[in-house]
Image (cartoon, rainbow, N blue to C red; front, side, top):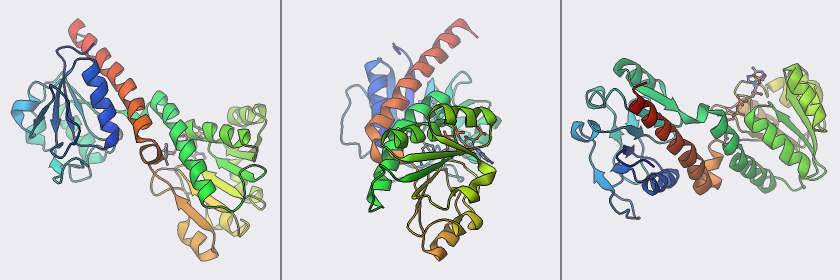
Amino acid sequence: MLTGIHVAFIGGDARQLEVIKKCLEMDATITLIGFDNLESKYKGVHLKELSPEVLKTVDALILPIVGTNEEGYVESVFSKNKIKLSEECLAFLPKTSKIYTGMARNYLKQLCTELQVELIELLDRDDIAIYNSIPTVEGTLMMAIQNTDFTIHNSNAIVLGFGRTGVSLARALHALGAHVKVGARKPEHLARIFEMGLVPFQINDLTANVSDVDLLFNTIPQMIITAKVIANLPHHSLIIDLASKPGGTDFRFAEKRGIKALLAPGLPGIVAPKTAGKIIANVLSNLILEQCSRNQEGL
Ligand code: NAP
């Protein structure tokens, strides 16, 4: 339980509601900042403005998935106003408190370093990334279906990257009956791809492997689907790039060649905000519990 623990939320989207509900179930003391248009009312939850008085007693400060922009503003779908996280204000956080976010831009990272407040980036964690791969794969399949006139079954699909998202995607495509090739660079990944009944290839040989591909999925956050690769793709093929912005595709050249290429960021929050929120809520509540027991033990 989180009895006596003060958790403050600043901004966010529908996913944050699941986290709030979980913290409420666990009896935390909750303050919401930047939630002035919130429709659901939660009993015992306080809506406040960002101020030193509020921050002084906070044990865990929860920011949205994209913590702040590079100017330090936090977005909230529950408020018309953006909230600025200034150094002067955050300086009032107790030194034992922690800031949790999905991923932090440099502004937030620097601020936390200067103030010596621990910053936890949840999307970096393996558990969250693996759970998140479930809605990501569902959203990817949805996009593939919406943007093609052929079935995934019996199509030639390529997945680039064999990390937390790539593994789940390759497995789902295989289960749907696609002929799946996976491009990776580590020998152990190539071995595992083979063991799964898929066709592995060295990522350096990408150009030579794409001439008959129908669906090309990228999870590598580097420029990987270059003009040279695109020049070898069949005209009807579809590229879906899941890697974080700006993706790993030469979109300009794909357009020039008339090949449809889609950058698809943030699928969990789009296709399954409730599930995405629950994933964060479960992991985050455990982290806050751990943090509090460590604080109590004086570690
Ligand atoms: P991950 O576990 O780190 O996997 C990334 C993969 O890319 C690994 O297999 C890695 O290979 C490979 N890779 C990285 N740099 C490479 C390079 N220069 N050459 C060849 N391979 C390279 O990451 P993830 O969690 O699967 O996420 C993948 C990307 O998708 C990230 O950009 C993430 O932000 C994004 N993402 C997007 C969504 C969405 O909704 N669109 C959802 C979740 C994640 P090694 O193991 O050999 O390093």
